[in-house]
Amino acid sequence: MPLSDLDDTTRQAIHRAGMLLTDMMTPTLRLGVTGLSRAGKTVFITALIRNLVSGGRLPFFFPEAEGRIERAYLEPQPDDAVPRFDYEGHLETLGADPPEWPESTWRLSQVRITIEYRSKSALRRALGVSRLNLDLVDYPGEWLLDLALLDQSYESWSAAAVAQARDARHEAHAKPWLDFIGTVDPAARKDEQVALKGARVYAEYLKGARAANHVLHTSGPGRFLMPGDLESSPLLTFCPLALEAKRSPPRGSLAAMMARRFESYKAHVVRPFFRDHFSRLDRQIVLVDVLGPLNEGGAAVADLQHALDAVLSVFRTGASTWLAALLGRRIDKLLFAATKADHIHSSSHDRLEAILRVITERAMGRASGTGAEVGVQALAALRATYEAEAKLGDELLPCIVGVPMPGERVGDKTFDGREEAAVFPGDLPENAEAALKPGAAPTGLHFVRFRPPRVLPAGADGEAPALPHIRLDRALDFLLADWLA
Ligand SMILES: Nc1nc2c(ncn2[C@@H]2O[C@H](COP(=O)(O)OP(=O)(O)OP(=O)(O)O)[C@@H](O)[C@H]2O)c(=O)[nH]1
Ligand SMILES: [Mg+2]
Image 1 (cartoon, rainbow, N blue to C red):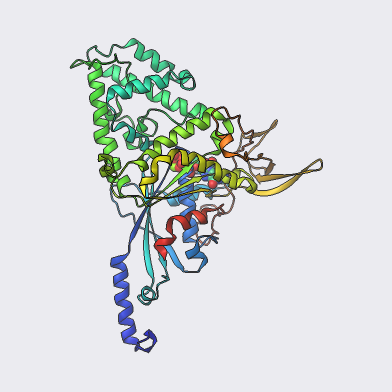
Image 2 (cartoon, protein in one colour):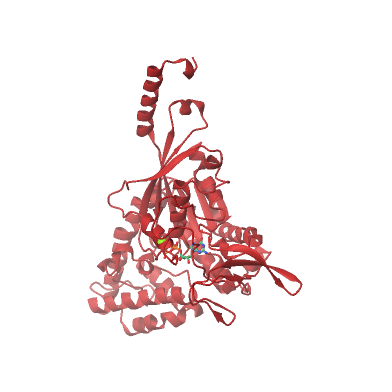
């Protein structure tokens, strides 16, 4: 019997039963959003939520384009022990006058958004609107690097870290730490002051190398770069030492104490993160700032490749290993996204995607057994520029226009953060393989940091328009559409 033939009371009863069923059966999709520091995680999550709740322009997110999304709204955070992602705070910063980018975040946070939609299935439509809880989990990609520590001994980790510190790109930053461990005898009696100083100088080296020349890959530990809630915790009071090969450290020695703390770090920091957070993710987006390293040339790109290799080893573990047991349920979709695509002209977006594809294929090469569907995209979660053409002699140059951040320079002009400027960013190389050769020259692109676009009214979140983006809708389609069918 068609639904329309039922009387009102019966129809209402079915509808009420349907709503109750929907409440009970609302599935939850946990989407991990990760990437190395400054990759664009916070901006991505803020823009994603904003576009969903305010019905943004998302023509390639098909559930939205088909008009099936009824509404989306924030729900209270379900996990009491996890900090909530500060969506309102970040939005307020973006809506300030003048607009600012959100501050760097340094720990894991989470937010739930509920999407109400009309299913494609007639049966489910008859039961009323369908619902999906989307939990977005923002965590530093640096923490994934720690997976590699789990099957290393303190001795092998120390040897690798010392070798890396002596490498030319690291040495300038590593010198104080190398000098320091040159003066301590690992076999001497343990001494807390020595451990504290070693840990501090080692952390300074890792952070300094990262900040100065964008060195992305180090032997970790990840929490030395991104301590999260463990800033100045005793769990971080250790560092690698220059050990003598094949001699296990005597009991009571400095080296024995460091080795014990290394093991505690694995047991109390690394394993709980993978067990309590990573293993509960259904899907994952890995954000990558490809443009920065590309612009610096060969060594920086090789370094990015290493960092991604290390980060991605979590997705490569075979099904039978003990690691697989720790990593829990399988991630079935994995999206790599090159962020900040609004720094280049749209004619280069496909090239950016091609370059990221080569980098990730190399890193994921051995991953055919993971079973995850892997996607690659270029996107700008929040588009800060628009395109224009500038005439230079007889030539028309494809430019991008935006408000450069205060202190940014183009030629001999320094910007004050208020004035708009047209910049010719240059073209990305056509041949991705060549751009990624170890000896590749810098791409000669010209990047300027732009202010966020001025679209949100200051401090308000009422009927403000959605945020502009590039290809964010395609990313959403890849990650969410099949759960909204
Ligand atoms: N133009 C442009 N810049 C962006 C975009 N996304 C991020 N950025 C820039 O990249 C910076 C870092 O972005 P965040 O979202 O804070 O990066 P994050 O990965 O959360 O960084 P941490 O919290 O430090 O780990 C921002 O301050 C912006 O300058 C984008 O879509 N367009
Ligand atoms: Mg952040």
